[in-house]
Image (cartoon, rainbow, N blue to C red; front, side, top):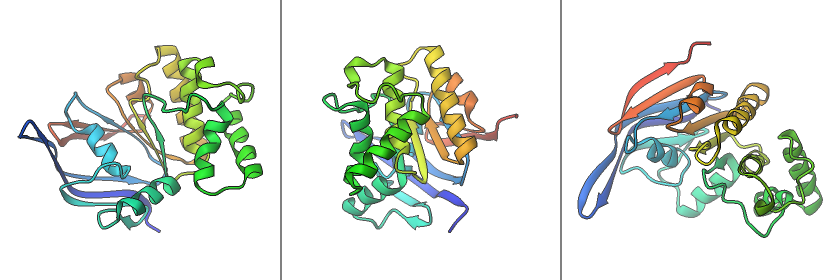
Length: 231
C-alpha cells in the first residue's frame, strides 16, 4: 500500500459557463501522505473546492490522473466511485447535510446502514463516535434541536464512524462563530494527531488554515504555494 493516500498529476478541469470556458484547474500536481492535515486555501474561483471534489470522487478531471489509497479513480464507473466514497472517504460539508427527521445517532448510523452493518453494531459504533466528540447526551435529538456547532459535530461523527482513509471538509466553519470554529478545529486536530486520520480542508478562513500542518494555496487553478506550517 502506498504511503500516499492521494496522488494527482496534471489535473485540469474546465467548466462551461454560458458557453464560456472557465479553467478551474490548470495542470495541478498534488499528493497527500498518510496522516497529513492539509488546508487548501485561495480566493473564490481559485480551484480549491474543485480540487477537493475531484480528490473525493465527486467530480472528474478533464485531463490528468488521480488515485486514492493506491487505486486509480479515472477508469471507475459512477457506481464504483460511489462504493469507493462510501468505504474510504468521510465528508463534512458546510451545510451539514443531516437528515432532519432522524436523531443524531440515526444520522450517524445511516452511513453504516448503507455499508450493510448490522443494527446492534451500527448503534454501538454511532454512540461511540458521538461520545468521542462530546455528544453522548444528544444522541436522541434531531438536528433542529441542536446548535450549528452541535450539528457540525454530528456531521463529523457520521464522517469518521466508518474509519475512512481520508476525511474531507469543505468550508467547515462557514456557518459557525469563531469560538465554535475553534472547538471544531481542535476536534479535527485531535483526530489527526491521536488517531492518525488524514484530513484535508478547503477553506478561506485563516483560523481553519492555522490548524493544518501543511497549507496549499491555490490561485487561478494552479498551486501558488505549498508549505509546511511552522510548529
